Image (cartoon, rainbow, N blue to C red; front, side, top):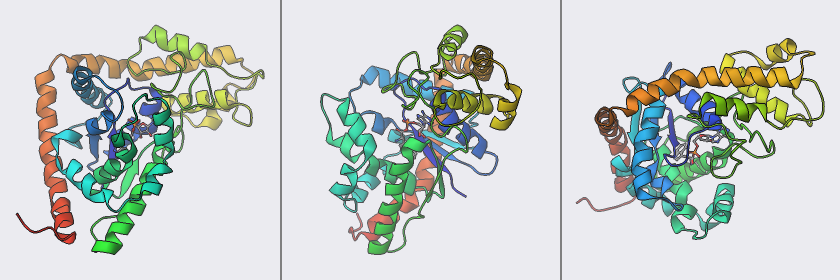
Length: 326
Ligand code: TYM
């Protein structure tokens, strides 16, 4: 069972990234050797600062390891360190239609936030398909917002296979049972996001404990009093999901426990649960950041493994598509 996923280095990583994705990567190490890619080539499709990209790439590697990714039990690497991705993306772009890319909701959302809309932002999902398909991936753990991209990847794989012969495994999307879409604490209709959300409604993984407390205690809820899920209770439902994942309890148990309690007490407990969840990760992160040479070494080992895993598929693509041998 091959598991592959990707995460962008730029922008601070938040509670939604952790619950929707990072935690799934860590858990998947139990059953397989997941391939986790820091997708720096994707980050350059919108306005960015080169110095910041270099720093945030190392910073994300440290954060992922601090969260529990073990470089001995997974393949953790930086996308640009394996040039197979860019090559495969070019080839896959000829089996992807303009119309398909135009329908991608993430493109529309991101394009609206940019002064300069790059062609790279438009073809971004093709590079994502290349990431996934190069590793003969069976399952892609992601948050709900990436479902459309993985579904497009499936269509691209099927089209390539039927035109050039079976080359790729057609991957499945895997979203977590709870927390596939963590919402902004201030605007429960929106997903939590560093770029599109509110600052007060986005809990960063590296926020100070008091900042986490302040953000969660000021979460927007509803005018009722019951701690339960349901219509019109999106804010509370989001907090129940956060509490559930942070403390490993079923939502039903949380609803029963807070039956009759006010929102204030519930929010304080959610805040403490998140502070406790992130405290050991933050501590380990700070230690890892002290030693950039060690991080570079881990990533070099990861890149080597990634090149070895993806090389045969890329060679197959060249062969099937009819390129003359060099
Ligand atoms: P990115 O970097 O925006 O997000 C990383 C992961 O976090 C999930 N996520 C969320 N989950 C729940 N609630 C939220 N509010 C929330 N916000 C983000 C995302 O779904 C994602 O799983 N295009 C991808 C990166 C990528 C990729 C890939 C993913 C590139 N190649 C190949 C999978 C496979 C992205 O921008 O994720």
